[in-house]
Image (cartoon, rainbow, N blue to C red; front, side, top):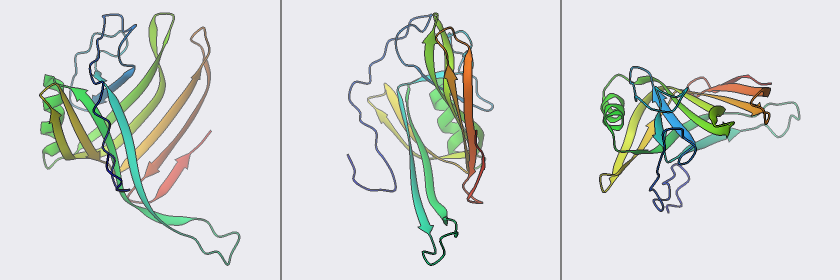
Amino acid sequence: MSTEQDYTILNTEELNIEIDDKQTSGSDLFVSADGLNAKGSVKGFEKFATVKKFSESFRNNIRKDSRQNSASVGGTINSGFVEIYIPESIFAFELQQKGLSSDPITKIELVKTVLVKNERQKLLTLTYGMCNVVYVASQLGAFYFMRFAFDSRAVKFSKIKDDGASDGVFEFKYNVKESTVTGGK
């Protein structure tokens, strides 16, 4: 594991996942990208591919005027990355191809789900705008590790009751270029 603060390398252990047709076992993480179709078999997530792991990495340069209590924290994001482990598939290769091209991927959506009454429900949705691949590595051809830089990041967290009904939503959006945050409860 690297100790660098500007990026994170995910643990490569225990990457074998098995997925049944009803998605009652295996990964609860999914990814989709604008213009690409993963052709998944999980109900409600047909345009998503299964992901083993993902992580985010930010490095901030924050300045605050300590002489003024009312002064807000300001600064810029030097780098923002989302990193995913994705099984080898046509979708994984298309994601690499599009991400490595000069035109960025307009939107990548990562979703963490929870199983409620044998159906997957979105618990956490992370949406990244204008993404480019900055790093790709493979693990013996079984999984690909990809790091994407992005211009914006939106977070949506849904609380879900045991019966599957919504129990509230929290969401906000961060724009890396403008260093602005919008939204909230």
